[in-house]
Image 1 (cartoon, rainbow, N blue to C red):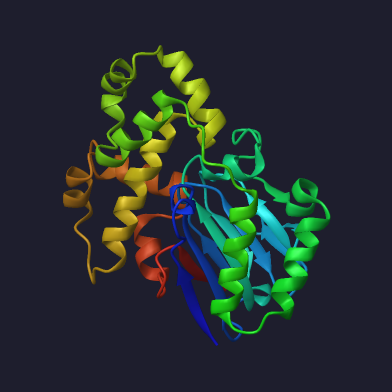
Image 2 (spheres, rainbow, N blue to C red):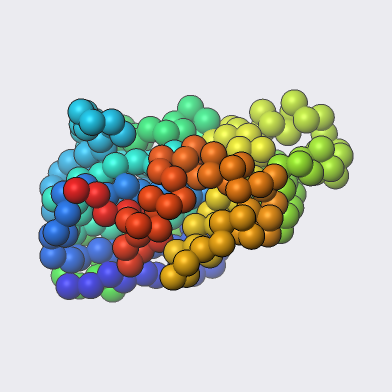
Length: 271
């Protein structure tokens, strides 16, 4: 029982950041908060044929989906049930990569879990069954990669969107979006429309998410954080601005993140 990751071979690596296989004992806590990250994800539950997501309030209302789903791009944290997170596989797409698999408008599925059967019919059910019958994480990951290779086309990202993604990876500063728009050679309105369709949200929101992710990555491994210094280094106006953005994306304060963090930066154990 272990956690395995696989980097896809070219040309799939243009579309997919990684594939993973999780086969672990039940967690001691009931719920986990999962932080948003760029790109859609494919989730296949091999323990239960369900995907459960809970509302972020005291009632914890449950939304149930199929055990095989395409999770659309997210801009806020989700609460999941650890009871079903025992044998799970997943695919982390690069921004724009999921559209190469599904042909879907990413903005239309942002924040949603879409039943894989609704996208691929019997092929999705057959994939899950074959994964259930395959012993060993290495073989399962190889099977999942072959399935993706058979169905994915190289992305036809608009030139301006591809340029914007590369630019924002280097300099995710919201204040400089105007400079980015001038570099693409299209209007801000057209760039925003194409970006939302292929990535799931606009370039400003994407830049904000990248800055938040950089803070999470840096803070997770530190015993103590100078939040004012991190805000300045990360391009935030001040510590209050960083705290506001942290609550927006993570659903918790920076202090609560540090108190609750576990071994994985994207997952916060909850009671």
